[in-house]
Image (cartoon, rainbow, N blue to C red; front, side, top):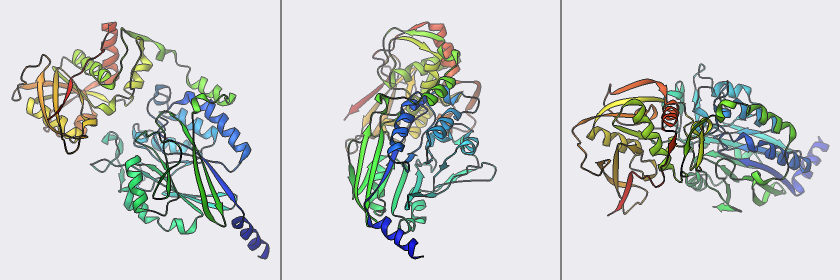
Length: 466
C-alpha cells in the first residue's frame, strides 16, 4: 500500500504530457489514411500512450467507402488499423442502415451521451469513456448535434428505433466525471458556435474536440479558458494536442494543426488496404464532359435539378444544398465517381403535384428561413429578401418563371426532388409519388444523353438587400 501511495504521489508530482491526435468530418477520404497512419506511427514512437479521436462524420462523401458491400466498412477497417481510440457520432453516421453493423466491426467505442436506441436498432454506444494514460485518467464525453426537429441532419427514415436528447441535458448527467478524472474532454459534433456555448455552461471541460461546421481553427483557440479545436472537412488538417499536467493540474494546453495531405511519409500496409478498397473500375466510367468548370455548389445544384426535370418530365425541380457534397468540379470528364461523391445519400427520386403556393411553403419550411439552407431550383427562379437585422436569414421569397415572368401561385406543377425534401418539409398529405430510381441514376442518365454541359455562371437564386 505504501508503494502504491508513493507511486501515485510521484505520478501527480512530476510534469506530465498527454498527447492527442484529433480528426473531424473525415467524410470517407480513405486516400489520406497512408499519411495519417505514418504520422500516428511516428507520434506513438515518441509517446505510446497517444490518444486518437474523431469528432464524427467519418463516412459519406466517397463512393469507394459508401458503396462498399457493407456501406462504410473501408473507413472502419482503416480506423481500426491505425488505432483510433474513440469516435463520437456525426449526423452522417446515420446516412445508411449499416451503423449498427459498423459499430460491431469497430475496435474502438463510439462515445455519444445523447443517442439512445431500441434493442432491435442496436446502436451500441457509451455516453463517456475513461482512458488510462500512464496512470492519468482522461474522461471523454461525446455528443451529436440536433436540428430544429430534435434529430440530427440525416434522412428521418434512417432513425427508426433511435431517439435523442439535447446535448446540454446529456452532458449535465455526467458532470460528476470531471471530479474523478485528471482531464475531461468533450468530443463534440455540435459545431463551433455551440462549442463556444458549451464553454459557458460547462466551464469544467479542459478541452473540446469539435466537428460538424468544418471550421478550420488555427493555433490555440481558448474560450473561457477551454481549448477548442476543429478542422475543415475531408482532412483539411488534423490536430495534435498536448496537455501538460503538474501536481495533478493542467498547466498548459497547446494545439498544432498539421496538413496531413502534405505529410511526407506513408504507411505501406495502410496504402495497400486503400489500393484494395479503391479497385473499382466502374467508378471511372466517363458520363459527359464539362466544357467549363463548376465553381459553386449552386451551379452543381442547378445541374442536378435539370437532370431531375429531364428524366421525370417534371416542370419544377428542387435540391437541398446539403445534398450537394462537393464544392466545385474542373472542366473535363465527369465520371460515375464524381456523381456519387456529389450526391452520396442514396435518396430516391420523388415527384409531387403542388401548387405554386405549396411549392413556396415547402421550400421555405425546409430552409427554416435560413439563407444557407435555401434549396437550389430548376424550372423557376427565386428572389429572396434578406433580413437586415439578421443577414443569415431571409424575410420573404418571390417565385418567377425561368424567363423572369410572374409565377402562377394557384396552378399545379409537377415537381421532382429527392425523398429527403418532403420528409423534412411541409407538404400536403398524399402528394408524394416515389419513383423506383435513385437521384444519382437520374443525373447519370441525363449526363450520358447530354454528352457535354456548361453551367458556368448559372444562378437561379437572387438575394435582395431591402
